[in-house]
Amino acid sequence: MLGQRTFFPKNQLEVSNEVLLEAFLSQYFFATQSRDVPKVVVISHEGADRQLLAQALSDQCERKVQVVKNVRGQRARWRQLALENADMNLQNYLADKRNMFARFVELQDLLGLESMPERLECFDISHIMGEATVASCVVFNTNGPLKSDYRRFNIEGITGGDDYAAMEQALTRRYRRLKAGEGKLPDLLVIDGGPGQLNRAVDVLQALQVEGVQILGIAKGPDRKAGLERFFLDGKEINIDGSSGGAHLLQHIRDEAHRFAITGHRQRRQKRRRHSELDDISGVGPKRRRELLTHFGGIKGIKGASAEEIAKVPGINRKLAEQIYGVLHH
Image (cartoon, rainbow, N blue to C red; front, side, top):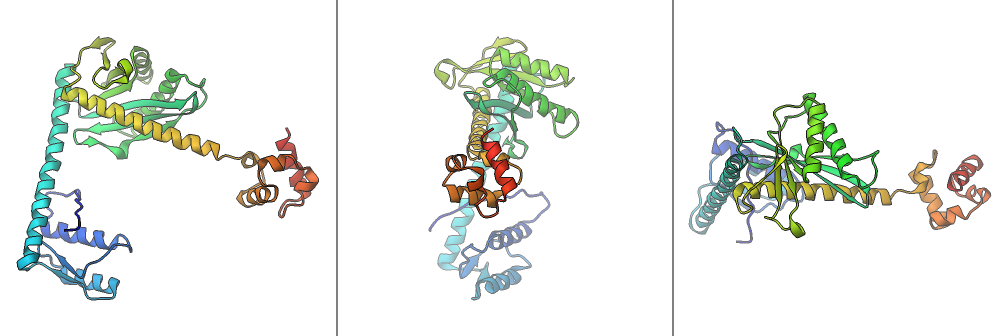
């Protein structure tokens, strides 16, 4: 056995094993041209299009490929091993789902909520010395992270390093859209921050007249150690056992929001640092920029050149050369 991979396709209950397997095999082998196709594919369920699949694989590989179900000996033992692995991985997958659901139930008890929160949103802010500030929003439901609903917000127009203003802008943009029907409101909004950030979040939701959303603040503990966080709900601090499943759920979504924010901040910072002063000059596109940098060896060389020298670069006329010189020496 050289290895294994497990897939969990989303399946409607009325779809049979045969139909599901046929659909999966087609997607698996034909999704990319680089997929290695063996001489024999052993399947666990007989489908109506088995021969058609075998012919299509043979045509793609330009050699004979068999898709077989009735096997004996070693091949039968391999198929049984695949079935056992699939069953074991499915049980582990379902166990993880049950653990996640149990954490939501425990969170309800810890916070004293009337009903179990089924959708959580968490916000975090990331920047370095106020540069390239990014806010992240991650979403969890009872199955875990819902990455299709993740969002990032590039924060503009605030004083660098003002996390309160950054959080207010991100929340305003997010919940204005949700209020307009562009998404689903969470049952619980988690803010990575203490009472100050929590109060700012309350003000935003009140200003937008968003109702029915509980707000929880998580302040980092000493030395930022997990399990020592302080929790704030309804304007007051509450005690939560850091070793409980509900606390682990809050730590999980907080850490995921932090990771997502940092990733966005790094991408934005790198993009800014790749930005050239030439990008802001009208008439200088990628080709002319490349010609200028190649001719003078860099932006410093261009700044040291006269308009006459710039005009000697292929594709740069006198008028554009004077414009470039003027912008770079403004």
